[in-house]
Image (cartoon, rainbow, N blue to C red; front, side, top):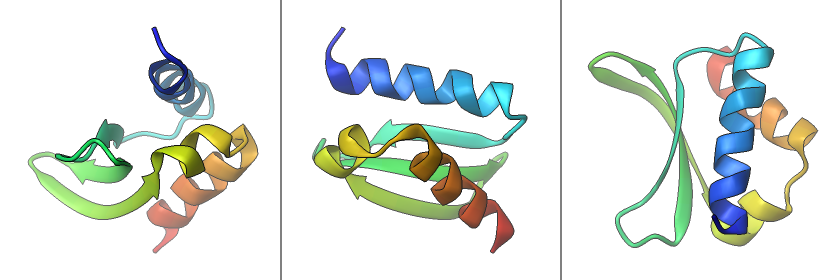
Length: 73
């Protein structure tokens, strides 16, 4: 498992611990960005894209803040 995969899996676990629901993390079609989406099946409600470097270098608090800002819009 590389650093990016480990960070994605770790963040999904943390979102669960914080009770942050309906958030998905994925790579875009070019695998150059991590896509953070708020979903209400089957619809995507809001999306943010971070470069791979931005995502890997961001600390947990920053990523949680980004996700909460998506949900608060």
